[in-house]
Length: 328
Length: 278
Image (cartoon, rainbow over all chains, first blue to last red; front, side):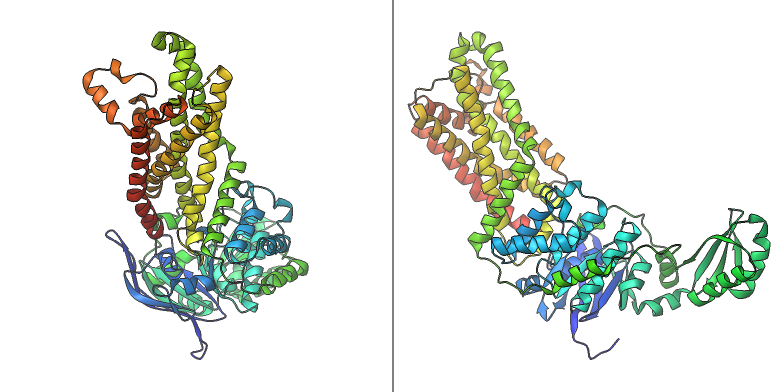
């Protein structure tokens, strides 16, 4: 990372406890302006609490944080003017329609009623929710809801956006849309702090990543850097003809890496695959005339990242909301 | 990834880009304007979730009908005489039940993360609470009106006339504002909207029954009568009754308003503090 870029977030020694639980135990962050910065960690690792402190929703017990040059405690209102939150961090109102939500936020941010209505309609059209504009948000589909969430957070384009688990539970198409929107925001100069459990998502979007575990930053770097520290993925293939598995295994063993046979008699996986070697392996299979039903290159999972970085697995099972867990 | 899925077309992205670039940053609105926006939100909720209002008015309506026609004759000699007695009390019950929803809706906002959205905005902090007060007051007046109209339909002809009825409604609504802060605190402390509802009704149901809403306390055993006499709901029901009968009871009215002021003085600051920190 360049040291010359101005910092959008500069946090040092942030701490927060709830009762006897130390949710955040000395987090330092330096997020360059104009980038996407991923904060990765399992539920309960402290990432939501960290972001809530940076977004002025809760005050830290110790440590300091500057967001876009303003102190989150002493200049909270200045910070609030420049940032916005999405997802579980700050919800839209389910008992209002999508349009009413956007009009309300536009008005609260200082637009006149008329301007707020114009802005709401513009966003509804841009985010492909115009036809559901008059429906209550509780009846929205997951993808629609997520798009409204994001539309709500750019009623006035923020300088810094906290993007919380933006694609959890979304189908691939909606997920790509969300990623496109995030990229468009960054192209316009917004900094994004992306909070996620998925390495792939961070890989797709983030320029830099911090991995949080047990309230501390345990690793920092570019996605490539991080993955290199974890090892490589696996090429998984499923053959049209299970009878040719031994032949395919020998071939992949030569071109990609160690092969493991799977319970499915037509499937096998070659470990140690990066994208280039996986492509080579698939090409070799095609050249040998072994027809494939399916193939995929699987990234190391967050569990594997954790195992590699900490020597322990991400502990708790996914809960519907770690916001609430950490709050209580 | 096994398959590439359709990425959003260039048109979508272009529209999103336009939407992102097209805004200048306006200056945040003033305090009053902010509170008005939240008042508007409160009105929209009444429009979109009328069930909430229905829930709390159905019970008092049922009670009016049941008590008047089942017990009216036995308690007061005739259903007409009992209606005169019970209706001002049912106005109290109906509106007080509605106050529980102040806590329920605040808790819903809190657990759904809507409160966090508001707290992340550069707005005057008490505005969401003041705005919901406006929504609540409309709900109180509607709940009270339902009972009054029902009473009139059943033959209730108060001596206090229109002014007396409006006066009674006003005192009850003001008292309810005070009480609603208690439920707001509950709404900020408990874990789910249902918990708030249960706790709220668990408190307000017995308190309403152990008052003079349904029967004259003179017929009760001594210790119970003593309790009923000091129950603020008794005082409020007395105030409501006196206004509707056209003989305003100054003491009861003053005490009712005083209790409302006291509840507000204690629970409003507590509400705003919890709202900030939760």
